[in-house]
Image (tube, rainbow, N blue to C red; front, side, top):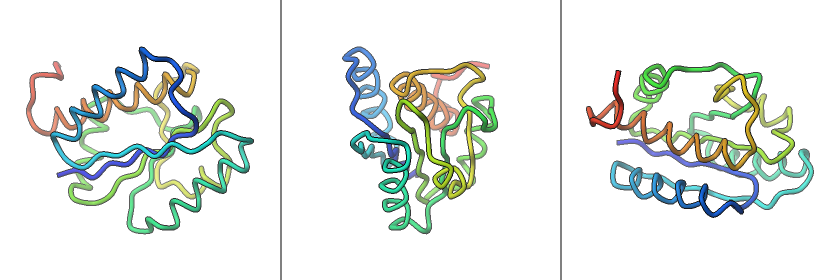
Length: 147
């Protein structure tokens, strides 16, 4: 069973993207523990301090921070990576419009890039939800993922 938490800066303002995130959230909750913590946006440093405060309460968690300079994974590789942490808490961090502070990036166990392309933080969050659901689907043998 997985235990995923997303820490995200800002609220989802785009209703279509918010609806997709809600759909994937409900699907993920049927498969394990899933939560999203939204933090108010601000400047990169104040956002970083608030993220680090939350992370300090989760010392046992595996931390994936999303950043354009991070490593890219194929969906199967991500699924394999996450399966190594079954039963452990895994936290994913999505920064705001200006990204993540260097302190948050340094605190992360994995700096992960969704793509070499640049996305809005709302689109990045929706892609993260979908890829987490896909990773779980691969692990459970669901027909959602096709190779």
